[in-house]
Length: 277
Image (cartoon, rainbow, N blue to C red):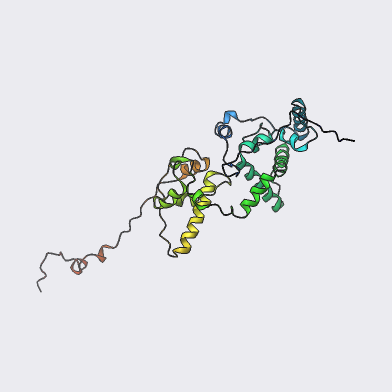
């Protein structure tokens, strides 16, 4: 007796964005970036309960001829009930912003490890469902393992040639940022608290590795340099930092006049006057 094979013409799978070497691209897609930057494109409606989200997802899968018995496919049509991407499907977020996905996963894991629940309600239920959905993919698990091991051993030349991709130095390579660190830009990046997966985060990791390597070969550290004011136009975190960043002021030390005046001046005698002795 032959086993009946079911065919679902409308079955949809996640289309991960990958680079030329097969690694998942973590920066947001153009569509995702547009939503993040334009609040008018963001869904501000109240979150709905999970049961209704599931009901709507099942309807979508059945309507397109998908496999309603496939939990992963159904979850892919769940609609996000939180964040700037609220109103988009779980599958859409995996296809458009892996960096944000990793950020959410790590935050939930930290929260569970601490035993403290920061929020509750429909938004939190949606977040937990999305994290569980994301972790069901081997690609996400591999990326988590890769990052847990410190990013692995990437080919140095490939890292050197990576473009910054944001701000006034967008077209500079990572190596150029390191080589020109005297201008203070690298120091500024190294001192920031970056969101995992962002371009700034990746650049910071690269600079940290170069700094450690440089320190190992040259124990004597250079004096810290004051970073020059920068103008950024893409990365939100950098822009916020720049708003609060003040121009450095040089402190001029004034030495006591008695330290530089001749002894005669200290006695109250004019330097050119005759003493009569």
